[in-house]
Image (cartoon, rainbow, N blue to C red):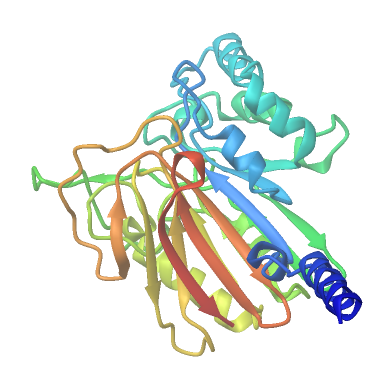
Amino acid sequence: MRHFTILLAMMAVLFSCKKKTEKTPTVEEQAKPDFIVAFGSCNMPQEPNPFWDDILAENPNVWVWGGDIVYADTDDMDRLRAIYAMQDSVPAYAKLKAEVPIIGTWDDHDFGLNDGGANFSVKKESQQVFLDFMEVPADSERRMREGVYASHEYETPKGKVKIIVLDTRYFRSDLIKDEDPNRRYKPDTSEEATVLGDAQWAWLQEELSGSTADFNLIMSSIQVLSGEHGFETWGNFPKETEKLETIIVQSNAKGVILLSGDRHISEFSKTDVAGLPYPLIDFTSSGLTHSYASFSGEPNKYRVGEVVSDKSYGVITFDFDKKEVDLKIMGDNGTVLQELKQSY
């Protein structure tokens, strides 16, 4: 009897050990995204850069600059190069750059003129300095055409993501000052007013219509949907906004998502567009090193959730099987400040 008891005890121990060695998948393993995009805007290399280690920890497949990479506001190209070089010398950014593809666009402060557009006197020279910073090859066609717009495709075993980067500076018509002291600009409804210019419009239409991607991201440095606040926005050119929505619908491109920056706040905007089989989202991520901390509110009829006025960056994860995206406004140390999920 004593030997039988010992045998049972040994079997219990062995069974217990076997149970403990069985691996239970973690939530992280179960939910690993098929593709990850990180992006942000409004950055000063002179200020503390708190997020690059957090962004790298997200394991993004690509980082997208949404404009205002630096604050130069200058027509002196040597000064502009020097400030870009300061950003490249930030150790944590240099580490990200060594491990993750970097793409993106400019906005007014790295373009060189606050709220600047087509009439900026050294825009051609500034374009070349920007392309140098982005390490675009000297023989690239982008060196030969006006504007910094570009498209990038990323293919995975499960699907494809296309990122279309717009230039909302090089060709943009002058803004009209508003007489209302609470607003900086008012809408220009004239037929000739433009955000993208003829060549870029034709290019964008071709890029969307010919896209075979499962998801198509359009990076605009300025907000597209939020147009009531009186600052820079596509809303200052309502006919151009309508044109963009029409091109998106007619292209039959799948999973189009708008990305934007500029505002020193982050927020989600969302609307239904006639003929589009999914809602159109504008994900604004702005304020990598400085944000509108004293923000007290502004109208946006398309807003989903609340405005985030803390410094932040954006992350988008993709599930090709479910045709789902998870959009997150992120703070320091991987804190999720706000989240929006959408099926396509």
